[in-house]
Image (cartoon, rainbow, N blue to C red; front, side, top):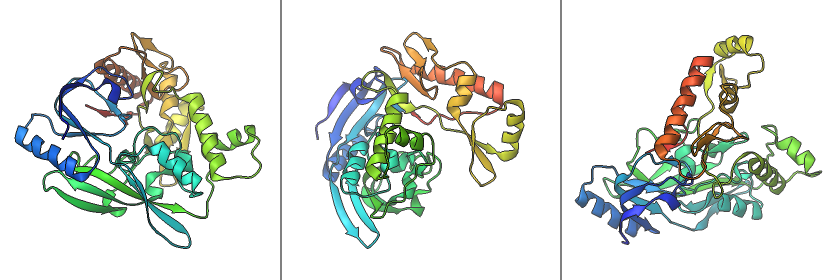
Length: 340
C-alpha cells in the first residue's frame, strides 16, 4: 500500500481543478485494493471511499476529506469465442480508447463508434457510456466488482447492471458500494456498421471512403470529436457536461410549434431525445466565459476550465445554464458529470 497524505488531485482530473484529498493511493490488483479498504475502515473518515479512474467525468468542488484510490488494474484477456463473437476481459484501469483501438486492430466490431471517449474501462459500464448511436450495453457481457463492505468479488450480468441512459445500478442503488475490477465485452466477428447517427456518413464521404470498415468508422468518429471537442490536455473539461434530456412526444410537439428548429430524435417509445447542446446555445451560453470558467465556443454541451477556475465556479455556471434552459424551454437538464 502506497498511501499519500494531503495529495493534489489536479493532475488526476481532466477539468484540471485544484483540489486535494486527505489520503490517496493506487492499486493494480485486488490484494492492494483490499489493503486500502482495510485502512479506510480503520480510519473511519467522514467521506466515503472514492474510486478514481481516468478522472474524465468528475468535478471536484472542494477538497476531499477522505480516501481516494486510483484503479490501475490492467490487462486484456481472451475469455472465449464462438462463430460470431469474441469475449474480451479488460482490467478496469485500462484506457478506454486504447481498448477500442485494440479491438479494431483485431478486427473485432462493436465499439468503433465509441472511439476517443476519455476515461478508463471501469467507468464504461458505470456510466453506460455512449456515442453515435452505440452504448456500452450493446456490447456488454459481464463485469467483476469488489464489494467494499463484504470484501468479496461479485459478477454482474447485463440484466444485473440495470443500464439506462448514462445510468447503471452502480450510480444508484450500489453507489459507493462496489469497485469494478474488470469488464468483459462481447465483440462481433461480423460487423454491423452503424453510420446513421450524427455526422459519421458525411465525414466518411469527406474522407473519400469507398469501402466501409470498423477502422474507417473509428477514424471518422475521431475526426468529428477532435473538430468539436477540446483536448483536456489543452483546455480543462470533462466532455459532455449534461445529458440529452428525454421528454414525452406531446411535449416535443408543443415545443416544436414554438421553436420550429428545435433538435430532437424520436426514441420510438413515446419519447423524444432533445439535443442539450442546442437548448444551451439558444439560451446564449455557447462561447460564454466568466473568469476561467466557460462554455466551449464549438460545443455548448462542454463546460471548460481555461486555467484556474475553481470547481465551484464551474458548478455555479452549470446551475445558471440549467436554470436558463428550464425558464426558456420548460426542460430541466441533468448533469452527466459526477460532482464531488
